[in-house]
Amino acid sequence: DENLTPGQRFSAEIRQKAIEFQKARQDISYTAEEMNELFEKKNLPFYKFGDAIYLAKIETKYWIEYICKRFENTGKHISPELAEEICRLVDNHSSYVQQLSWLLWIRTINTATTEQLSYALEDLLDQNNILFQSETENLSAYQMNFLKAIVDGIHTKFSSKEVISKYNLGTSANIVRLKNALLQKELIETNGKEIVLADPVFGVWFKKEMLY
Image (cartoon, rainbow, N blue to C red; front, side, top):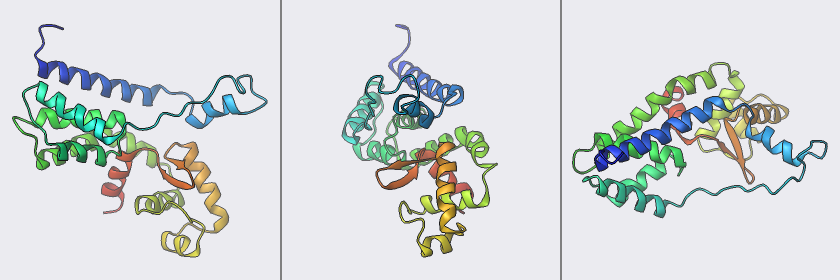
């Protein structure tokens, strides 16, 4: 709308991205794993039907340029360092970078501050609180302990005696079942040989609500 100010256009743009992101999370009927199986299992009709393309995350330097430019275009300022911190907090997750940037933008009068970013992050956690609660309320104690290990920085060697003992994961045979269950729930994903959280903001929420 040509009648909108630059600030209102920026706000509307990011708000729409946030709405689309949340709607996509609610409306998806197939997990990513199930969609992959449609194209990778020989007994399914779409086997080898085209190539799977996995998009890499947008690099931080490009996000910094974009965020700083969008703030400047609306008469506000954010330092490259603070823009980089936005990216770090949400692990360059595109939708979250945009949501957190917008939440910081609406709190900024002239120049964005670290304190305002902290409040914006709390706003983001509050927006996702109900969703994250629903994703964890039916998890077993072992599954919760597995997530605690990941949040603590454990990404490999879950079957080691030290990790099993420290996080009370049961037996080494239980590790495979825990991994598969959490993959099915899309709470974790594999990154090479490592197991990581699928949602970086879920990790921030989990650490805040479940560990302290």
